[in-house]
Image 1 (cartoon, helix red, strand yellow):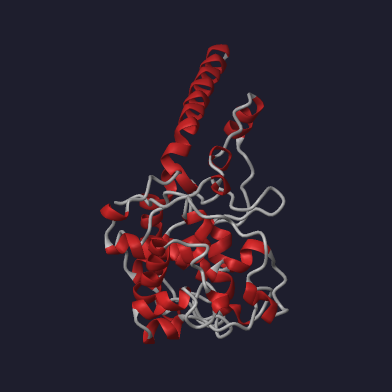
Image 2 (cartoon, helix red, strand yellow):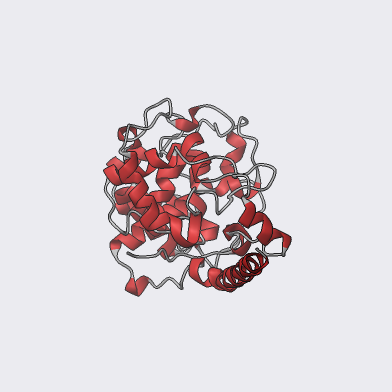
Length: 301
């Protein structure tokens, strides 16, 4: 019995040492590579535009993060957020791109601003660029914040990357039924290893008091889930469904499976408790905190 206990201790130490070594390289694995416009495909530019729509400061490496409210913010008084959040495209126009006519038509994110879905269908790419440069009003001029290439990628996403999410999620936020087994296969292949773990709780997007995992987002904000699956997460190497040409059915299946994942961290098992007791309590979220990194460079399958 004593030999078994010693062997178990050795295995645990060896395993946790390997985990610690892997953790030291995690930042290299998950942090984006340097983005080169010269080597980018149209799909890469569309994906990058989607990340700029989500969080343009995190997607870039040479921009300054505003610390004041957006000039247009004074035209509404419902959404109480302030500072940089008011400059994020998604905060006004929503994850479903429909603004006051979509998911952000109620709740704490409501602003009353219109969406961009209809404009993206009617306007040309150059016209959309012009709007971002203030053609429809100087208060919407982003030229002092974003470079010309950034604005061009954002306009390209608006023109060619935006999808009609009503085919995936109804107005009440209920996703269309997908094949959870097919979704699980996608999750295991593209999301589980080195990132989100077997049950989707390896990376906590929130904090210890209010944790947020894949299952949380898929259940509470499926529009955000779809957008991030398609464009990727700013400041990380998360895969982009746009770049890797996943179908809408793939995204629907992955969303269906993700909604079965836990939205709370599981109770640690014996092995986890032993590792923590020896100072090896790291999880992926300890190795890599998304807020620390900026840039664009999703993994390409």
